[in-house]
Length: 143
Image (cartoon, rainbow, N blue to C red):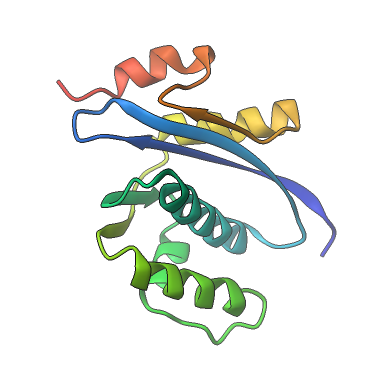
């Protein structure tokens, strides 16, 4: 497999839907889309831990990746090491839930991932987000 770029978007909200932290990360990724999604879950867990925001719900639009993470299936050598790291983090972040969701529901994270690819940068915002996401953030607020 050749090397290519993957954008990861992470948004952390409180129970009211307010953004507590957000980031876009750019990875040079010599792996397929499922491994990229597993890496996104791993990076999301690290970001949540680093921000001290636990308990939380981590959402991914890749059902296969979520199933592999939740089943602790370490047999595949191409991403077994990442799954071991995720299992270790899950034992530390006992209040974290990992669920599969539609990319339609996760529009802010999808847009942040695209932003990483457009700017070729990784950026973190604490209690903030890029102004270009304001409409999506507002639309995703609970009623």
